[in-house]
Amino acid sequence: MKRMLLFLLLIIIVSINGYGQSFVFYRISPPIVQGDTSSINPTVTKGILKNTSSTPLSFKYVRVLNNLPPTWTSQLCAGGYCFAPEIDTLPPYPFPPITLQPNQIDTMTIDVMGLVAGTGTIVIKAYLYSNPSNFQKDTFRVQLNYPSLVKYKNEIVENYSLKQNYPNPFNPLTLIEFTIPENQTVSLIVYDILGNEVIRLIDNQNLKAGKYSVDFNAANLNLSSGMYFYSIITEKFRDSKKMVLTK
Image (cartoon, helix red, strand yellow):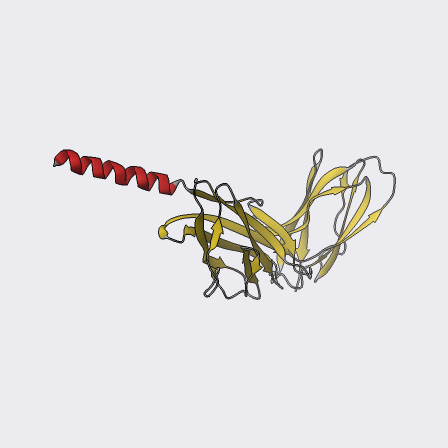
């Protein structure tokens, strides 16, 4: 009798372990996907669901966390369909679950839009339709920035430089200029006095050699008066300067 019980327990354990490895779900987008508030198109982050078993399986997705700034919406798309932003479970009733053949994948996307700058965090759970306790989760983050007006002058420059913003102090607009003597990947970031990132005016963009000017508008960022820093980061040059916002 004991041997029979041990044998049945072993079968259950093997079955559970096999079930737990029957599919994978994971994010394929960067840890934080960058976008801006002016775009008429959503900022998209993606995940992959794959049936790794030897038999067809059916799945559903659930949005278990939707931590977004005000005015933001996130819309889920899976199984070839996109659904209204308020729908958390995909596919919703009366749609059938998503059935995948062995080694078949489904690409799930999250479309994010918003009118204010900030970062949103969304957690998605994919589960086996026949066994909801068999699931996998992943986290998707999106950062939306206010668009900056970047102007380029095709000038021959000899050195890297980051100019002092003008005017300074400012309210709410100021101009930041910099030069790069060769093609570079550039980030231009504004920080508060505690070193917290406020906004990325340029986010890891490939820029041609020349002179650049960037309009920084603090009107919609809900910033208090005080000192801020802006930093340029390239492959070969880094520099920071202070600026003062007065209201």
